[in-house]
Length: 164
Image (cartoon, rainbow, N blue to C red; front, side, top):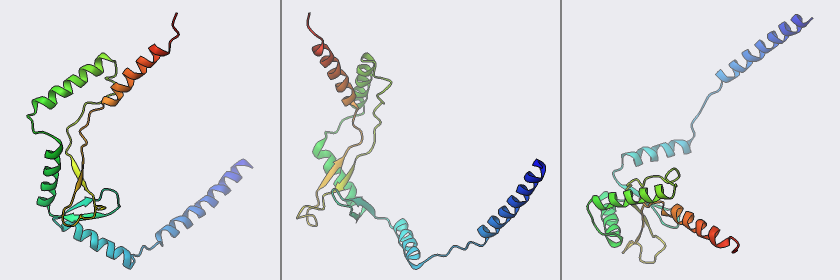
């Protein structure tokens, strides 16, 4: 009896599988007008030599010449940072590593990778078109907050112990 049931189920499943395969093969994909327009716009944007810059507090994006973008980045970087040779950032990174090792945090703190800064345009300012101002986003910050938290936790544990 068991053999009959499994044989019956297999034949039923085979019919079901054949119907599913046939149904999948009959599916036709069609594109609509909106998809075509989006594809055309995407092709244009990929061929365009301009740079798209994100706005600061809105969802807008602005097209700018690469030279203008680089000038804005340079202006904002030099406003906040001094130029130096590579030995100073290397010394800072090695000092950060030593501090992390001394506090046994080196397994949780990654080495700061040098990454390029970028800008977002402050388009909510009234004189945005005549004098664009920017927010500088610097991704090369160290993880000193983890070290500070560790030291603070240590000192609060010491101070919260009851005095004898």
